[in-house]
Structures are given as C-alpha cells and as structure tokens.
Amino acid sequence: MNGFFGSLWWLLITLGVLVTFHEFGHFWVGRHFGVKVLRFSVGFGKPVWSRIGRDGTEYAIGGIPLGGYVKFLDEREGDVAPDDLPQAFNRKPVWQRMLIVAAGPVFNIVLCVALLWGMLVIGRPDYAPVIGHVEGIAAAAGIQPGDRILRIDGDDIPTWNDALPALARHAIAHQATAIDVRGADGRESTHALRLDQLPARIDELELLLDIGIEPKHMTAAPVVGEVAAGSAAVGQLQAGDRILSVNGVAIAAFEDIRPLVQKAAPGMAVQLVVERAGTTLGVAIVPVAQGNARIIGIAPKPDDSRPGYDTVRRLGPLQAIPAAIYETSALLHDSVTMIGRMIRGQASRETVSGPVTIAKIANASAQMGPAYFLRFLALMSLSLGVLNLLPIPILDGGHLAMYAVEAVRGRPLGERALAISQSIGLMMILGLMGLAFYNDLFGQLH
Image (cartoon, rainbow, N blue to C red; front, side):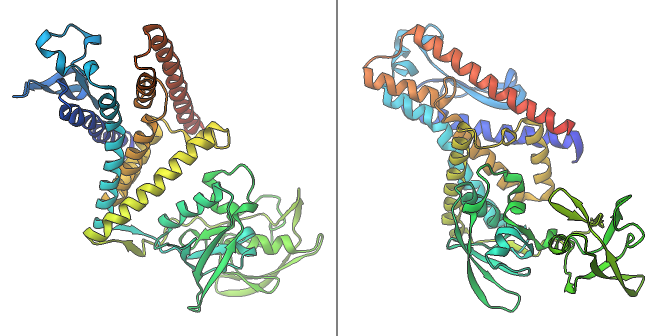
C-alpha cells in the first residue's frame, strides 16, 4: 500500500503492536504480584468485542485501534470490596508498584531486542560500505574514493546502515575515531578521522556531508543534467555532456568537480575535457565568484536508476542473539545521548517527529521489506520505552520518581503535590506534542 492509506495502515500496526506490548508488560508483572486486573484492552473507546476470562479480567478490543491500556483494581479509582483489598494496586508495597510501572518500558526494550533478532535472522538487504566521494575531514584523513569501510573504532561495519550510526555516535561526541578501510587495490589501512573538528552544532541529516563522505551508491555520474541560465557554462557545456577531467585530473563522480573548480586561481579558466555524442572535446570556462566559492553553473543529471542492494546482513539464530543485544545497547546509548543534547539545546528541534512523519517512515519501511520494517519497529519500541522512563509526571518515569520519593519519605505524596506534579507533566507532554505536530506541518510546507 502506498500514499495516505498505506501510511495510516502501517501507523496503526506500529502503534497497536508497540503500545499493546508495553501494556502487556504492566499486565504480566501486575498479575505476578497478585494485583487484580479489571480490563486489558487492545485499542481505546467502546469495545467492539470483549469477554470475561476465568481470572475475572475483561479482555477487550476497543473501537479506536491506537494502542491499549490496563486497568488495575485501585481504591483511588473506585470502591473496592473488603475481600479484594489485598489485590488492589495501591495496597501493594512500593517496590512492587515500581516494578509494575517499570515493566512497560522494560518490555519495550526487550521487544526491541526480539525485533532486531528477527531482522538479523531474516537478513537485511543493504549497500556495502564503499565510499564514492571524499573531501573535507575525510580527505584530510587520507580516505580515498573506492575505499570500503571495515571497522569504525574497532567495531565491524558490514553495511552502510551500520556505518551511519557508528559515525554519528562519534560525531555527536566530537571524538576523533579510527576507521579501517580496504582500498580498491585490496590493501588495508587505518586512518584517524578527526570528528572533533566538526562544528559544535551538528545536523544529523547532513552528517556525511559535514564529514566529507558520500556512499558509492549515492554518487552521481559526472554527466551534466542542467546548465544554469546566465552561468559561465552557458554556450560551453550542455545537458548530456560527460566530464572526463578538470585541469588534467580524471573525474569519476560529479562530486569530484567542485573541489577542483575551487582550486582554480581567481580569474583563470578551468580546463575541462568532455565527451559529447561520442566525441571528446576540450572546454575552457572561467568560474564566477559567489561569496567564497567559485562556480561554473552546472547540475548533475538526475539518476533514478540507483544500483540495487549489493549485500545482505544475515546471521544465524544463535549468532543473532548477542548481535541484537549489542545493537539495542548501542541504540539505547544513542537515544539517551540525543535526549541529553535536546535538553541542552544542542540538537535540532526537527529530531522530534510527529504522527505524520512516523506514519510516512512506517510506510516507507514496510515497502522496503520485512527486515527494514522490523528495524523500524525496534527503533520505535526503544524510543517508546526510553520516552516513558523520563521523570515526567503522567509518564511511567514520573510515577517511578514519585514512588521513589514515597520510599524515602515512608509515605506517598499529598494530594495537592500530586495534582501540581500532574499538571506540570501534562503541560510538558502537550508542549512536546505541539512541537511534534509543528515539525510535521513545517515538513509538509517545506
């Protein structure tokens, strides 16, 4: 499915799976400690189906298929018969209540491990981590076009989807890191990638551009697609020209042209050799200064025929267990780091995604195949778990914080303090939701 209905469908599937599993964590641990569960509902609103189990719990499917909820027996929410008081949530020791509350986020993290295990066993089609173009920090490190990334800081890198988070992890921390590559000649070498030289504020979406690396599968051929009106290239180059060299340097990709043009002396012509309709000819163009840059005014030919995946990351069922745990721990570290950067104002507000963006990503992941959708679900499950552990009233983390205070004080917070904290938590959640919806709208308009 594509478009609006496809996005809506996969969003419902995503929320249904993740929130229901989250609530099942509360349900399972609550039952383990003898708390009576009044209702376990998949979905909200008026039930379209329900039945009473032998355990006395009502199992229901709500008419609004967005997640689910667990309703425990609790004196704070209604009258409780004297015989049922030992089964009331509020009567349980504080440490048991803390474990019941923490179970939801913990189950989300466990689900993340299971989903990543499934992805690794199924096998994720991907691109080999071969570099197509280098400049800037990467070029200064001695990395060359055609190099295949083998390891980053000692960790094996089998695909580009493994290379990107590893690079981001060190870039965000502004840490120089060792990158091992195998060149086109088969020789292996180690290079010091000075990610500590990146700008203080990093745009995760432009990370590879800032580092100076472009994957080979994304590298455009050195073919002119458009000549800008009024530019220096008008009358000299035309759409379809393949640029073979610039100032005597052979060109393998369109991205190789710009740095060579920048090296040209001001006011001096750049000598290009191009292939046009089977004929090779020389062209001299004087770049036009534009700020600190010099341009000749050409754009690459759009290429919709990007090469297909050329590798698959697949592990056996036993091998996939430690790999899934390791990847989950790395993603957990990245999530906590990102939240810290957001709190300190070092991360872009655009990293907060709303339902529209999530729905689109869910649909796109599903179209890419089951392995990619499992990874998307894993990331969302981990994000849901981490978000709920934040010490914000209303969220599970907020309840944990209040129970921790109760454990220290020996008695629960008063009703007034509880009401104030709930109001603060509600305002914080509404603010976060507002930012997420704004980002969705901003993305649609731009």
